Image 1 (cartoon, rainbow, N blue to C red):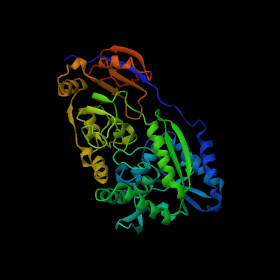
Image 2: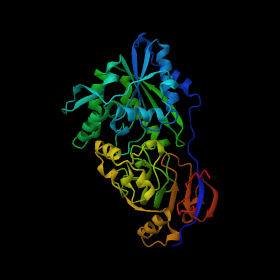
Image 3: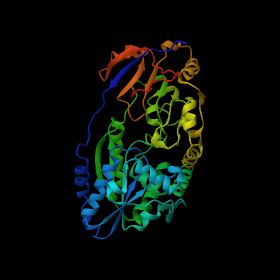
Image 4: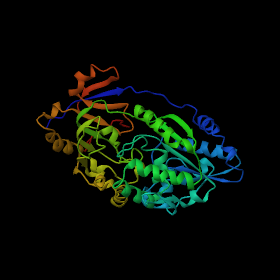
Length: 422
């Protein structure tokens, strides 16, 4: 079978970014005048989540430095639901993998899966909160604000989600995801957040918004009374900066790697157009992708292949990387069991393409519209098939770097990644 020839292109996105990250964290937190509330000698729990947030170790260290400047003691708490296999050791390993270590931050890490039930929502839902965070005098919620991969609302993934799922740990994540199947998402997130803000001594939020180049675009310190309004505003900005695929209609999307450090669903459903349906675009999606081929998992995801079930095709190497237990725990906790289902797998990438291309319809394989990306976070440089060339010529935001050229396979019949180190 003949395959399409590929063209390397660069996309141009808004490149707004924070250059002095420690300085910006200090400036933002200073606006809250936390010294009026946080007393010398008190403890402040600072959340560290499981996502691969740019500069997260630097941001958390700067937050710790600010707490120390008040004469207080920062305590880092891994804040994630079922990630890391739902174990304290696994969750600590995840944040340390991002550089959030005791040696770097100068702060103690206290990891536990134990929670305290602090109250019950009007819907009868018990509100779980991390034991170590609850035992501290204050809590600072640190998190990235961005569109959620499954839910839609004025707040999606950010400070509110960190209070629910992150600080709710495995038990909280399980009950909240179940409740969201019966109640409105916004209703649940606001009810639980109201309890947390009233009962758990949250003193501040530190919100991060990234640009389309996976860089820190904005850092905002937020007073607890302003969490909802400010997060809503930041979500609007995050949507504007979200990296996007170069075309809205794609017959096959090839993804080098998926992982929890990339997105909650391994690959961002806002980017690939499968937020509302695992295997087809809906009227609410901005992108329509007919087939997805996943080539591997990130090292940072530690075998968690959540989201693999959104793809139709993969290879044997990827299947061997999957930790079935960890993946199942995460997908069951999130109420998304289909995200753990395994796609059709072939031994080599060449075999995958030979099997997948005929499923695209009447288009002949060399003329198929294919986009090959590294992952859904890094989309500034991608490979696209020759069939897109007429569209490229009309676009000022796309620059051809090289090609067209034949698809590049290694001696084993596997594609070279978009960013080939060799």
